[in-house]
Image 1 (cartoon, rainbow, N blue to C red):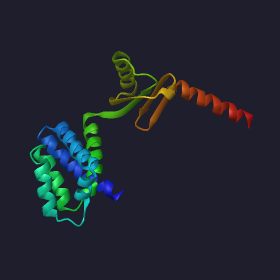
Image 2 (cartoon, helix red, strand yellow; image 1 turned 30 degrees about the vertical axis):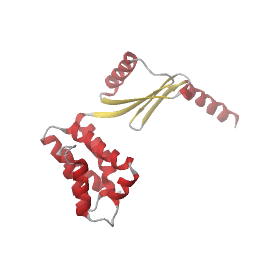
Image 3 (cartoon, rainbow, N blue to C red; image 1 turned 90 degrees about the vertical axis):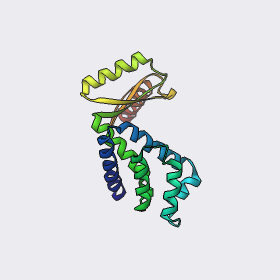
Length: 181
């Protein structure tokens, strides 16, 4: 919990700088890229979080690796984490930054799961109907789960709407089992 609070403070500060420069999306993408690069390479991750290595060595290496490839806000944020010995917060900072950015845009995560991919028209119609009904804008992610058999499962934040064939069969089985006992 303490790490989440600290990460939120860093993410809030980074977002404020990005908003001032009007590059919120770019900074979010670049933070994500740096985080993915560090987490995707075990040797780089171990180097980045190692408490034994000097901060100056880490700063030089990070600036040489990412310094010219990312905006200075991102580069300075990563260097600041090293200086403050908060390297382990990077992943949570990225998550918090995306949440802050989404909230600033008025968006909410929406996951649509179907047995087969939806056509763009069908997906668009579904999302528009949900946006009208709930009065929100959604950041849509689609997944395909053949075990759903048919229908659609929608996850909005912590709300689940399961209109899949598999979900209805599970409900029917639970009801039949509950009546037997």
